[in-house]
Amino acid sequence: MKIYISVDMEGVAGINHWDETEASKPRDYEPFRRQMVNEVNAAINGARAAGAKQITVRDAHDTARNILPHELPKGVELIRGWSGHPAMMMEGLDESYDAVFLIAYHSPGSGDGNPLRHTMTVEKLVETKLNGNRASEFLLNTLYAASLGIPVVFVSGDKALTEESKELICDIHTVPTTRGVGNATYTRHPQDVLDDIEKTAEQALQKIGRPPSLPQSFLLELAFSNHSHAYKASYYPGAKLISETAVHLKADNIFDIHRALAFML
Image (cartoon, rainbow, N blue to C red):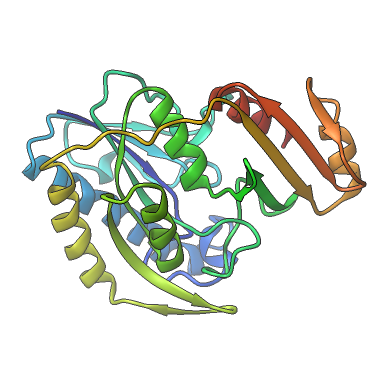
């Protein structure tokens, strides 16, 4: 069994402020970077207990240089940095994998489930919609995996995000780490979260389901915070400037959506 794990940071247990996500502020960042590593290692332990023989970890936060190779168990492949591939947070995923875990994911831009909520970028986008629905990184990446025939079977992150995941995949396994209220967070004890991730990750691989069905076409709606960003993005092939800060793009497949985001942002 071959498992792919994409790891973010804004959904780890206890995190509350942007300073805690930035390597340039080590006093705030380092404790939550360590929790990020611990949460992915708990998922690896659970996957191996379920029989996983090959595991790839994609560091998918900020610079993508948060996890050090020696911090993972032997035999695990780690993808660090950004090559420029449109898959971005899912780079390296292909049809050879059996299932995907998403660790430390978070609520989408304009949501209220996490003080650190965003979709792809904090600086440029206010809201991202896909086929009329608010789009999280979870949604975009789950649909990308589905386009390869691979199901996302486990997600951890803020409570609102884990609830959203169940609307798309009714039998997905989840571990909520924290709950956002305004700019505050109500967090579970980090060790309780680690215990639950390991146990639930193992359960998620006992019976692997099918990925969600993909729509026949996609409409991407981007609401930018600055009109100049929208103007520039509108020159991406097929994109249309709808208002001073809104750009729409129609596409036939989810890869084209990811490619557009990679170049427009």
